[in-house]
Length: 261
Image 1 (tube, one colour):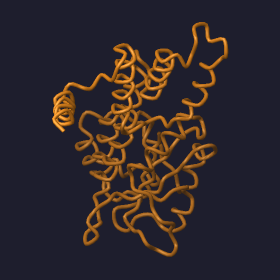
Image 2 (cartoon, helix red, strand yellow):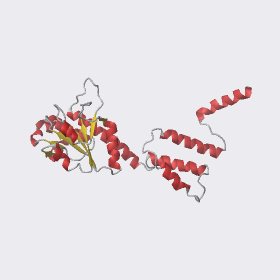
Image 3 (tube, helix red, strand yellow):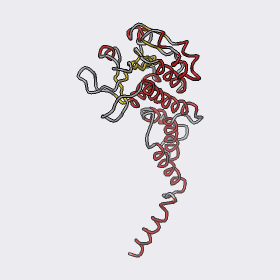
Image 4 (cartoon, one colour):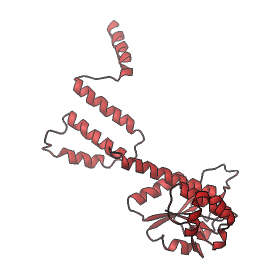
């Protein structure tokens, strides 16, 4: 993950941006298109606990050079508030863009990801945007779209950390990912209802795993599916429909009313 600042104008913003990426766990050196004079006393003051990382900054004469070491096999996102221009493609919002980018990273489709920010005054030029793969914008009020450079870096970095933290928690889970848990639950249901026979003579398990393996990584209503599977398994064990607790009274009332009629 690379953060690239193109021609930043204020050392204070460089320092604040450094603090933001450190807070969000981005460990690669900051890349700056410009000269070392931007790392001034204000940069050091606003970087706070990340001040030591200012010495690691890599400097480049232009964006082409800054991207040269990371662009082969990488994905570059141009951060911009200017949308709707005939010279710029329609932008993605930052959250789905980061999610898509990190999915590409996790599957090996790309080797790295660069987030590119323009100068405070007028942002990235059209030529610099053309060097990037995606145009990405932060949702904001249309009457005032301007955002401080360091704030923009923080928002993008936060979205990166948000997605990676979520994926890492899934990876650490002893029960596996959400998708894997659902697959195992579906296989359990197939066992319970006799769709898979003991010893699996017809090799149904690998066929089901192949089908269920095509599920998306994240399923919004996975809890509902798990509840449905549990309900089916309980009903099989009981030999009749095992209504959930909150529905039992309703079913009893309906049965009583049917008897009265």
